[in-house]
Image 1 (cartoon, one colour):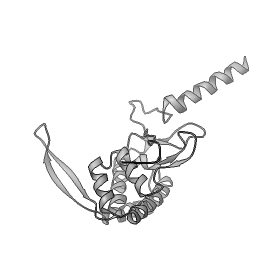
Image 2 (tube, rainbow, N blue to C red):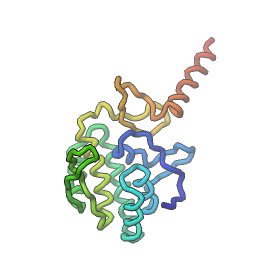
Image 3 (cartoon, rainbow, N blue to C red):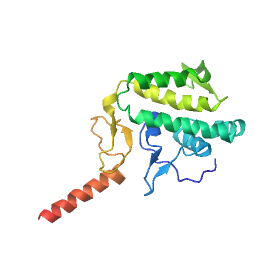
Length: 196
């Protein structure tokens, strides 16, 4: 899918948390990957919420106006989520439930390659609300895991990114060791050098 933006900076280890990180400045300038419907679809594809075929089908089925409205709704949901992370308020849960209730889809059982059955949710994309609902589902799955202590904001002083700590000892501090972690090491080294 053609996009005018650089690829999103995906570091959250959870598609629901990636919504919080869909705006930021990883390349120096503030970017909003949900600024319009086209960019929203590209972001959803990059995060893994939509496959390439699904994204193209949605783009060709829904008009630009409806996709732009969905992007606006998703930005509103992102703002509310930002105020409700890592622990969600009852009002935010109500908002998620309303988004989920408005979506089109069904559940089905499929056979895996290992010969076991797996329950799968099949999303239908009839309106832009279905796209917002898919993101709401990712947030609901994150909140339902009951591991709010593993959801945290990067320790970088100017970083706005969130991540889910999947490390064994649950002590991850940085969105990325290569970026914020390295900056912290350099700052510590410089401070130590100045004090000598």
